Length: 240
Length: 218
Ligand SMILES: Nc1ncnc2c1ncn2[C@@H]1O[C@H](COP(=O)(O)OP(=O)(O)OP(=O)(O)O)[C@@H](O)[C@H]1O
Ligand SMILES: [Mg+2]
Image (tube, rainbow over all chains, first blue to last red):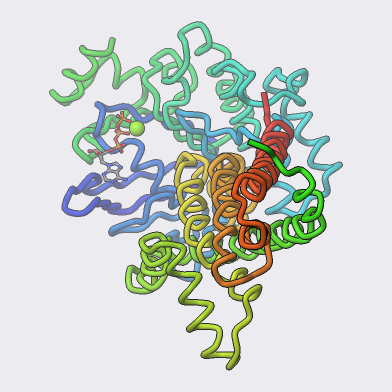
């Protein structure tokens, strides 16, 4: 589904990703953890080309992202992304946030996009907020809308970059609940998060990144309870 | 001091004509200046430094020289070079448009660059092209932020249009000066012009704040 082969990424002379090799199978939920600055966000952003790839290859369902002939816009519709800072469109109502891309990119009619959008809002428990503007929502509600917005393009893969890090603690649960449901429905997911409970419950695999490398990868249980690498142990002892 | 209301009444039709021309010059300057300013702003934002250079220097020139010099240069040198004759109204419109375009382009650029990078990324991650993201996500938000500085610029433009009197375009200030010349009186013509300019600029301000409120989201 996702195949990352010797991915390297530099910002100027700063080599942020050194040599990343990862394969994500359909319906798999992969959790990425690691200290700040280790390249987790950059890794996710390379998967849907929000960053240009310096070297190596990323295949999404067999299509090479680094191939010049690849239609990046089309490929991006297959890969939904949820950001730490939500990035909802503040000048549009909640329902319009969700309808925009299906209408403009997929050329779906307004009526169909609305029906679909309301269905997704029901799924994340926010139908009653359809006509509200994002600024009037709480952080947890914003993030659930952002998830619904990404789902409206019917992606096969969802990327989450610390989706609960900007939230007040009491709102973390409602967002994780939506993500767990998504995982149970069979969505392929790559999630950067430090929510160990989430990783243990729905994660199939955990990658520990440090210094632009994947230092260790294993099932959540093994990685958390029985880390092999010193760096992993040091990191886990700090966050657990 | 006796205030000669009768002279103002006598000059009223000319003041009216002048005011209409002032409004005309201002509207033309605002419209052409805005459209031109958008292009120049886009030009200056081009990634290739060399291509952006002419736009940068356009802005430097029009912001870095007095408007009075610009309007005299255009009226007495530029327009005759192309038309073999002078044309005050054309020169005034040209000068106002070219000058305000420089300011509008900077307002436009600042407006776009003030929008959080995450907005573009979210739009692109949904599969929108750069153009679609600009059109549906970035520009509507940038436009809202541009209204107050654009309002300031348009007010400056209305006031600057009074310099068209120097090249004998028969706008409001031209008739004010004519009245002073004819009757050797200063209070009546210039107070009248003052009040009319004030009405014009205040009307524009309230129009813009109305628009701003219309676009507000809670
Ligand atoms: N646009 C950029 N330009 C230059 N350097 C960048 C850019 N984005 C990221 N970096 C650098 O790349 C490195 C990795 O950043 P990245 O955001 O991927 O880390 P992260 O693991 O997501 O950290 P955090 O947990 O703080 O989000 C950092 O040293 C950062 O300074
Ligand atoms: Mg990050």
